[in-house]
Amino acid sequence: MKRAATVTAGLVLALTATAGTTAGTAVAAAAAGPPLPDFTGKGLMTVFTTTDYRTKVEVRDASGYDRTVLWPSNWKVCSQHPAPGTDLGGRTLSLDVMKKGEKCPRKSSPDRPKNDR
Image (cartoon, rainbow, N blue to C red):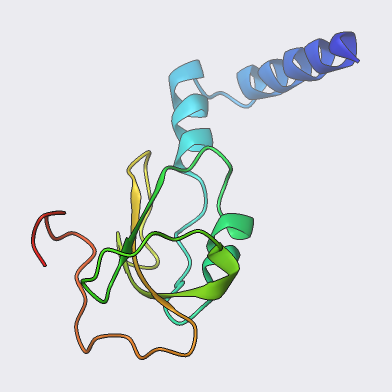
């Protein structure tokens, strides 16, 4: 199994080199990834199943009560930062969430400081 992975990686590098891209360009293109989807109104589990496992996700209770998210399937996304359609580019995906069945605040800001309630 390890040998197959090595051969595949060598093949990708060979194809990249013949396509005329440099190694730095290929790495940057791979790191960029697809544009960020709009998670607003969707379940928190959707975020975890849609994003790459290496994506750093910060989740905060939008109610201001600083509740801990124990079961992601019981929570929904109220807002996100960076905005949908942008490239995450290695940044942290910040989400304001509420329990399903609760209304999101009119305006929640996931890029607010943690101590600001």
